[in-house]
Length: 149
Image (cartoon, rainbow, N blue to C red):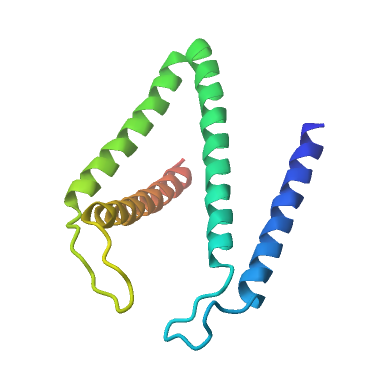
């Protein structure tokens, strides 16, 4: 039953994506004569992506909380390792926030963004770079260890 439900939800999300994407690409422009044209359904596409992000975040938080609860009872050391991973991610986010400079970038036709939001964007970019680098290193090291064994 659960497998059938997840398939139905997948098809609904896929259909919503197709409909909003078609509206975005084929729906015309707010002002076709403007210097920077904006598709009419830009906000709809952005809201759909925000909704998908929120749904994914909620699902991850719920499932990880349930798994942590199970592991805390059966294997406390494994549960502690998962908390350490979250703590390390929090440290990376804090360090990259304070490393970012928050310098304004002037773009024609765009209002300046606050320094806080610029620092948050920099934090996300730097954190993504660090996490991708860590993932690549771990894949390379893991591959080497498998070949050695």
